[in-house]
Image (cartoon, rainbow, N blue to C red; front, top):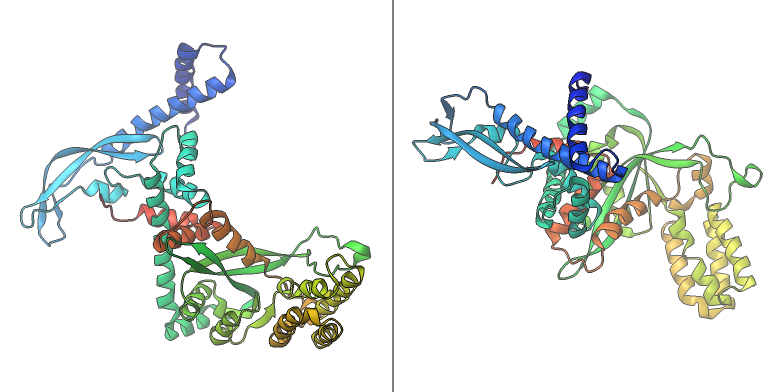
Length: 451
């Protein structure tokens, strides 16, 4: 918004005069800043209340009632709402239906205001605080920013409301993603999209009141080369490094569904990202069987890659059990084994693990786990070819998502969630991380009002 410089200048002049009257002309800058902020808040509070009151310039004599009859205008009624400037007071027309006895204030509905509740503009801010930190802490944050205190419960309600709006969007996608005629029509209209779309799936345990539950998450993203990247060691790539590639345009989605129900959900989120139109889909995940069963069922043509870092973690216990921690022989074997894995020499690596088992029976358990994992995922571990063809082979994108959604928000000290509270807060946070906050805020502003 660009406001008149003349108006801004006059307001600034008035504010300076008021501040000099209250704190003098030589007050410390911080005192002046805090004073001007509070003055702006009070001015904004009064201005917003008058703006809302004047928004109903020529009210109709009658309005439609939900029962089908007409409600008649009675009189103006005063109400309060909580805005970014604190509690505002405003007046608007009240209508009463003589048939069903239901009353209504059309202005509230039009502006998205519920008396006694937060306004859409404030809701956007407090829900954002609620997805970042614990609700009690968010209340303290908001007081510092807004100069008034909002209840922890108000922050919780708005955070969950944003999560519910995201859940409604995802439910809408599930309906449309199952419509085969719509899928065919979209393909005909848009055609196939060039390039690759990536996805990763994982889960993390969240603390509920009665138990710990796995919150499953899926990330959709694209991978781009890092232009400024300079390879190390004479332009060669170190084992385990793909610093020249990075994930972009990431969208996260999550839920407490069991694996069977998570499949249609994953497909719906892919539909939203037009996964069905891409020339190539690539899934990079850990070796969990439920994940690959889901991928094979809902995305049968996708390239399947087991995350290299997960696979490499099976090697360290072998070296430790066979030779002991920090043993030079164990470190030498581990370095060679990691190199074989990096080069996709899985058959040779399995044989090497079995030879260790023969020479060091105490490593049997670690060897058995590694060999089973490598054998089950051998086709998904052709890392030399994957790297040569430019694929990202690490699932750090979903690992980051699980950390940001579950570890940093749901697993706070002493937290014990209801399933609904955890789910909606997680969905709201996922939407924020995905860059969808403005969409949710617009949906929140358009909601029918409830007192």
